Image (cartoon, rainbow, N blue to C red; front, side):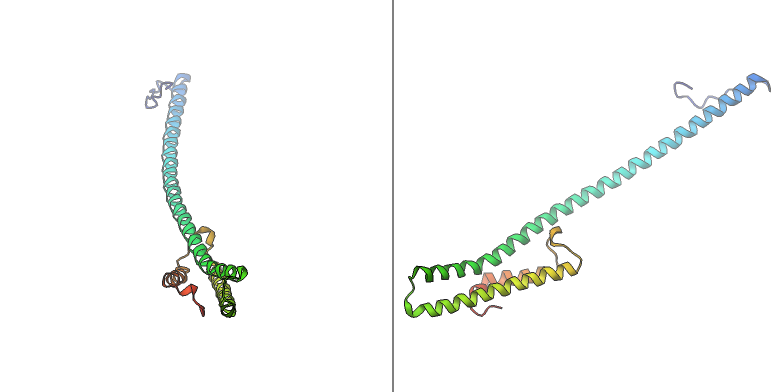
Length: 171
């Protein structure tokens, strides 16, 4: 028994003290064997649960990496969408502040500057509305680039490519 052989049964010789001792020994060995089998089953179940949880964590980790990539892409796109009209506005403002624009064009540049600033403000409002829509849908942008927001970003990206964000009358 001490070396793990729990299948050994001592035949009870007689109904005396030795027979009772043999029966108690056999009962102890059977109890130890049952505990050993239960422990082995518990260990196998626990290892299976650990394997399942490990796969779940690995899948979650893959998904989190993808969400992080999408979040970075989203921030990059938004940054670009805001930077493009802002660059035009800054260029116009610098032209006016340096006084290099002809006097007769300054009014037109100033009007264009105001129009583009309004366009940028509308772009920010659209962005805020899209973020709010995503939030109301129960998805946080901190977790990634939401597919419901994708069409709006696609429209903005196409406007940038076609030069639509830098023109007067955007929005």
